[in-house]
Image: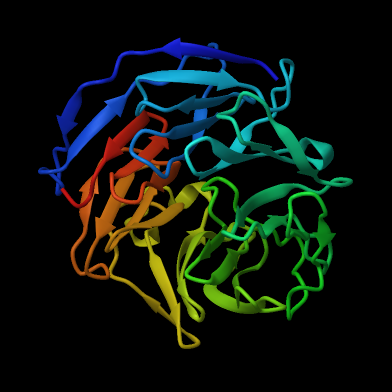
Length: 343
């Protein structure tokens, strides 16, 4: 593991020239970690603390809102495994997930701002770990790529002992069923509820259980018809009340305005929220105060009234992360930005 500190100048603020014209969007300069580095994962839970993950194994940490960064490599100096998801916990603690087949899929943990990393788990055989989350008590679930009719999910209550949880679902997996890892949010714990979304099978499905439940209930969503069917991101509002995004993730839907959908599963029924004004399948979903936020490669949209009115910024968002009260961050092909939907 290597670590070094660099400083960058904070970018200038600009106003979004669209429906969210009163929302200040601050462009932040990204840390420099080599020409081949592309930053794709973001996590933050305070105004000043930021974590980023790159396509070639670098993690960047900032404790001053992006003015300066500390770089580390959880896999080691020669490790180039892509970081697909980061979860911040407190000011100095974080978990990162690397993507790849078999032992290249790993979960790491740091308690000291990335100064050192411990490997908690790695995939077996040809499995791929897709996304994860943990609750306040330390329980962690990781959803991976399935095989035949077996789920690939692992669970730990302490970060040391990991158990296969293929029997933790009330229905068998479909062929090739796994999770959508681009958004880093196909597994979520919130409001005393675990939720997961599946992808890459004939039918995209939703899986959920209460914090004390023994097995995930599996329900088929309205998304089906091709191997590109995916629940891309989930957010549980409560048990049996879950928001999610998804659709057919093939290239032919990237510019389709009809492909931009937000779903709600409530009281055993599916419904659609009014469509946000973005093109293509929505790949990211989160919440901030009273707002629902969604995003993809064409921009970010948010609503405080269940989609009756959407505000938009044309900032590409591979992933979204919001603090408790100090706004949100989006990372995408145009870099890293900060904005506050409530202002």
